[in-house]
Length: 269
Ligand SMILES: Nc1nc2c(ncn2[C@@H]2O[C@H](COP(=O)(O)OP(=O)(O)OP(=O)(O)O)[C@@H](O)[C@H]2O)c(=O)[nH]1
Ligand SMILES: [Mg+2]
Image: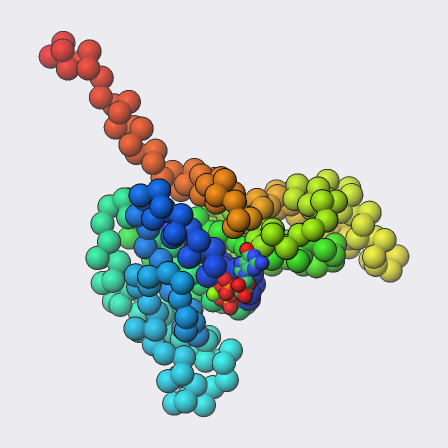
């Protein structure tokens, strides 16, 4: 059994920074992780890249040879990845063994997680390869400065959740930038009623019914819960990692082995 985090979220939400911080943290505590770059447009890395989509396809080549723009080019690259799951990705994943832990640093185009099937198929492939996968959705803390922004961030995360059907952890990144304690209290684990009244205050009266339906939807999917990530604090990283490990049952095998071994039974034999 392998373990994997699929690190997703809007452009600039801090995915690559999270991946490198997690890598560094794990190195410090003596835990092995491998970070995989799945962004064909990425150029600079703060982590050692264990596996790189750019070895399969380069965005520059695609744009030049096919005359595509950056977003069309990225879509083309991701479709190419999808077409090569069974050969390129399979072969690369064969280099990893049981118990290996991979972190996939994904591109920030949110359409990739809402209405194109590439990541769904990617995840299915990982599962067939015996990986336990968790989606880690990063939302920039700037989203909590405004209720309408916050709701749209929740909806984007929800659409990824519906599309991927994976254990899903929501993270509010860049907490060092939040200065208002009230924002933190209001949004980290908000009361649906409070969100609704804030939303109604912001929008014209004809939206009240829609607002209510939206908040109910978000509440039903337990979406209004974000774990704060403050990279200045080791405890913040440790806590998030423990939550995700729990989702993918990392480390539980070790416990099972200990429990399975019953010295009394051995003596009786
Ligand atoms: N203050 C602060 N800035 C951060 C933090 N995490 C990331 N940033 C900054 O946010 C910007 C985007 O960070 P990235 O890690 O590249 O974000 P990303 O989600 O990988 O971006 P894309 O791959 O382009 O979608 C960079 O300028 C980072 O330095 C954080 O915890 N605090
Ligand atoms: Mg990135």
